Length: 308
Ligand code: C2O
Image (cartoon, rainbow, N blue to C red; front, top):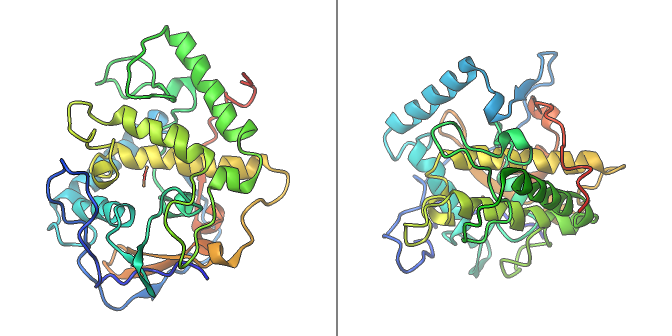
């Protein structure tokens, strides 16, 4: 059977690293759950999710204003920035039990729920292409290390770029030929969490979390630990790219390679909408970006020929 949406009223303290401060991840509990519905099919042009380094000034100004408005909301408003990181913490650090299995936690990482849970319609940090491998101008101008292992190895920029492109090829192509290898292992109602992550969830998803975390903090906060990751706004751009790579991977397969398994398709999560109502979203509802009204900016796939 599929993992069911959690009971928001039964949210427990998260499992935190020993050195993390006491943290409340539980959302303001909500009543009146509604089911997610796709927007009506319309002739409106698709909204294009841009690469963050290519977004125009107007888009960036809107984004900044949206984040500022979310930060101004009272912390317990489900639309506040505070609640956005909490929702990640709650689903990632064991705050919910599986409905019907009080001894088993819900964990959306290390399994086939990783890609669908983390899907948001926002700009993406295009770290798989050379032009996106550096952070915005305020940071030092060296490229990311997609294989980062908590040790800074400074190599010439062009070598680092080649290495990154090889890693992308390995994680997206040669090491991702089967749906399970890319998406992660099945995780159904009654299963122990963490059956196994897919290729990209491990690298570069995990390595880029560590790379953008602060090594001076006890648990690499914010980005380097699940509970705190979504406090850093770059989390959403990082996951924007993960989301994009999921759809890129689907596009590289000759035929539809989604799991056909109803236990995956009917897994449900609860999020809040712009009117602060809890909404039940099933994986089967979020598989078609066009039906959700958006597309990705076409930025090319420089790693596609980068076979090591
Ligand atoms: Cu839920 Cu990037 O982690």
